[in-house]
Length: 477
Image (tube, rainbow, N blue to C red; front, side, top):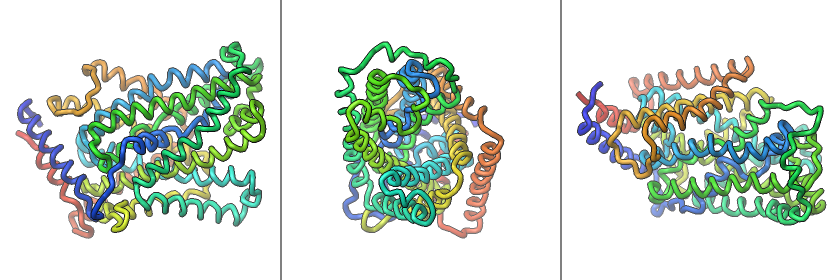
């Protein structure tokens, strides 16, 4: 298919105008739908990516203080910033709830858009399932009955349903809840860092680790990767944001600053104020560090903050999954009913329900290989996302982009190749079980695409015509 510059521009503009019309007209709306403001969007992105320094501890245990500090200083430059820049450009150019699904669809067609949706959705709901479990794990420190058996099962089930209902009550409510949770969960680390200042010995920051403790580089890379990715998840909320072309760059930049400071300042405080016992640096050790620096009261405060952070992580992830399904329905990749909204709250109630059911279905399984499979699927999706970003620059060179990464193609290729190297590493170190599970999930995504095509041909379900119009408008002599 060949396309001149003028024809490309005209076709591209019509594509964008049509997509904006589709995304701005939900199937079921309230009389006064509330759009997401800047501050709530910042904290939703923050919880999509981070939620606080909880979980950064294994980097110290794996490689020592110096490499941990350097990792959280350098990794954002070579991974987080490229992912955030790609998200900013594409989310403002294609401001629909499908997010990365729209990008792959526009770049390579409906098959790859559908496969992207499957990879990212399955990865998202598996991550979603882990948060109620972590929440109950913290609660069982105070209420031991939740440690096993029926009480634990009941606690996970009820906490999942309660947190899901909060999401159903409205994205604006979820956004402002995220603001409150973010501030409260960060407060104990602000206090810990201030109290730690007189106790800090800067020489501890340059420690390469204790003698006799081997470096675990796989754990180190996975810890950095896990704590600093998922910037693109917020793109599925673009249809719910007031003036996304202006808001997304500001929100991504602000969330980036908040995330980096939220990691590096507590890490400097804890590693500088406490003598190194490397084997103690596992998930949750920052609470013990707080106790050593200021007393038990700070330890309890950090543990409470961890529970609040987990709630924020759950709400942000569930919002991303639910609105992704709504966006896929807008594109015609999924049945129109997947785009159904609540009459009372204007939220995608069916998307929330499907995501919750998926999460509950894996909440009681062994998570070791399952979570690794989620990372594997996410990595596949990110490789496709970087490829979509580059190809859209080639495919629609004159398309108006409200935010444009200020680089030529060669620079963009280098920018995308560096984080792609980390993605390939994650794929390469996966176990056979992970390859098997990921292959089955990918097969499910492929079968879903062809099943949806069969449903369209047999007219078993109603589908949005947006996909057909997009395809027709993309054809050019």
